[in-house]
Length: 346
Image (spheres, rainbow, N blue to C red):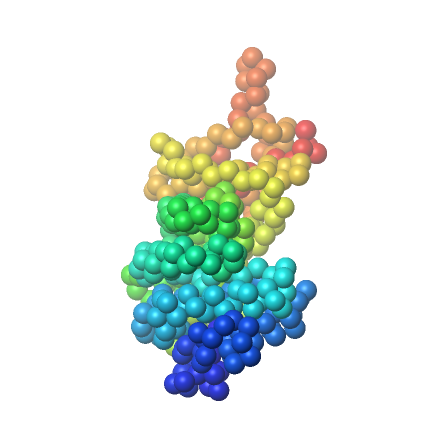
């Protein structure tokens, strides 16, 4: 839910604080409260999760969406939360997606302090069910940022709330249709594909419930006709990241438990995804040299899958004493591998 219609905006701006926002949440003159209650009622059973606004901690520029203060946004949530629950008691209400890198969590910290200091907040679940982040960065940065957010929630008695990733991706600099310089955290097309494979595994390993890629298509809604990091270009041609995302949805789906193993002394980062009758080990290195990786065999035959979904078979190797020797696989810089073992193959 985002943007204030002109009739409910004192200034006419879609970024304005809705009129009468500080009236009681169920007052008929509280335009925002009545709107979100009707919306939640109308879509109940079809849309049961609602994000309230977008990136409100961006202070200025093209991406600014909120003209109010931090306190105004806190009030927006104080009205939205009970109003949505009145329309759909089963609905989940998520905070705005925070682009953490803008201020490294300063706005979020103050917002959580605002809710924690409210004597009535605990009775209303602190006015939100789900924390929400937008992360565009290196995969190796993700554990630190997710851990920071989880710690902030726990420190204020909100530690049971899950974290969702509303948006994630990497912006390529070398796409022929969108050439750009390498600055600004941009990646190559190949690295964008690696990022999706690595980041999804990392998020799962850290207990993130939902992950959203922005975006499927470049689109035409921003300067110069969209944004240059869609999985598909506007002409529907696929970037390498599209193949990586297809691999993720094929081999990561159905994960029951996931374990993130931080980068070890050899430079390898490892995430283990356990599914019904199958284990997937996702491996990558940030180092420039080739690296040999040993993976414990879970069955006689395994499948090695590149980040683009290209599979090859690997066999369990037996040592001279009859013990199992892990199969070895050589992986190059930022080449993400998924090794999957099926119980049916034992």
